[in-house]
Image: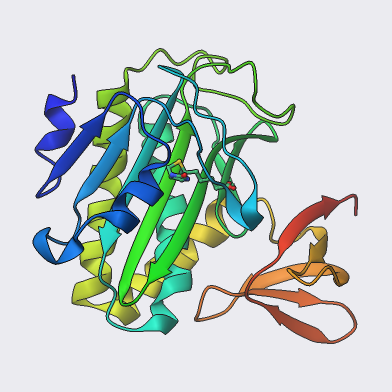
Length: 244
Ligand code: BTN
């Protein structure tokens, strides 16, 4: 069922159903498995999203992937999640999706609707990188969600996963080999495909405080720079695009 994808990573563990692929990788004895081990499930009963939200993964309608990464330094984390979003975007384009775009930090949107989300969780020195992609419409999905099927793309899970793993490995290995060059390439890729930059945005910080301004650029850590009279550097926030 996932033959092609199994060849793209050193180890792939597949479930028809699990609570959450991130949770599964968090409770795995990770000393026994190599970096880039992938946990994949065709459905989740307790999928987690950013900011402690639920993530809907109904059977056969979504792809849930968690990858085990061992980044060398914590300041790399912002780039790794951004690279995951860039990889999803590139994979969707390869699969025929028209104009997939990135909303900072790491949502992938098509026609303004979310088709993929990313949740990175740090445990000691391990980074669990969780990626969800909506394959089909789901009854419990939020209104602002879309799926490959709704976008006219009939791709099976193995093809989507294989393309995603291929795209991510390319960026991650490049990052491990030459971080400065990789960051430059990824920053330019983000500038090209971001729908956040150049927009008036409201940033809602985890403590509930807010900032309104123009999203100007990303910095060398992948943080969003917002001009609200003076330049603010935002590392974690929910971003709402406002009308200019
Ligand atoms: C978000 O946009 O809020 C992030 C959603 C991340 C969902 C993925 S699906 C695979 C992995 N397992 C989880 O429980 N969550 C992530």
